Image 1 (spheres, one colour):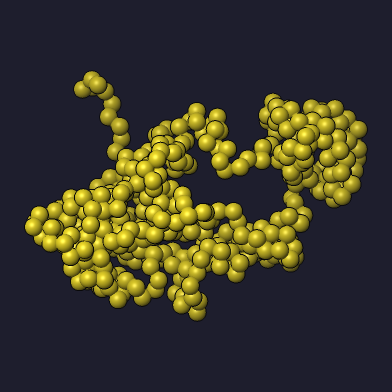
Image 2 (cartoon, rainbow, N blue to C red):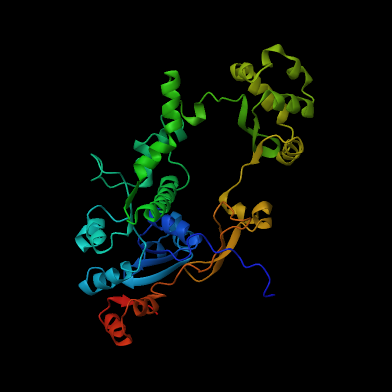
Length: 400
């Protein structure tokens, strides 16, 4: 490379150190976002490792998904020597992030009130089930808050509440924790002091259903669950077509209705005064949709996709998650990057869904092995090789 060649821009949070005491999804998502944006994220794990290293079934992909670009140090926080090592790490940090049960960090002496006395510039991010209030003693899970926060009601059919098919609150709760940390970093630039940031599953879920709450406020009518709702758009449905394939098709404006009818030769429907405007078509759905379903049933999903794409109409194949590994757009745009799985095998993982200067933030560090950076990090905070060896002999730390 020429000396005059442009150098890649530094990532926005390069030079920021995060020490995270997190597990599962919510807390690790916060660290993931900051790490992808350049922060040095140190993951403090118990001696046996983050439990997501060992989960089966729906949790088997958690660790490689949410822990790239991080370093790992293993510490036994049940021992005072482990807590002392954690305190030395925290002394070098800009941000501490945690998602333990309420009271756990205070018992360890690693809560915000204690740590801010040692470093008033520290930013402390807590990820909880609930913000402080009547519910904050409860144990929350993504599914718990979906049920009590209206999301499961809106997702399922009437009388059959159904959780969303991914960890929406855990992931978004972690994202809001990271956004709060970013805001606190900026505030620290202005004030010179840090602060505590709190993000919570329940409040995140309420934010997700706010549009349905406000629909009731605006109309006085309760929102129906999504499968039985009255859509704002006349054609906005999954169609079963040739050979039993399914495809989502949408026609959401009067202009699109004209294009749609002309593309398929539905001149009679275009001329029908009962179907003139979108609102007219919404009111006519009971008799209009069976006609459309019958007219489109003989086409294959591929044929419909081609017509809709050619005419810039919204459509989507019904895709299973595993099929996304072969998605041509994701592969052409570099949206999937090589990742090391828990068993050492290789796969590809989705990157952050945004670009900076035309580039997706990438993977600098593979998900760490347990304690992969223990020795290096302990040396950085003043431990001698003999002291590190003693900590390993006492099973207070482990790893390289």
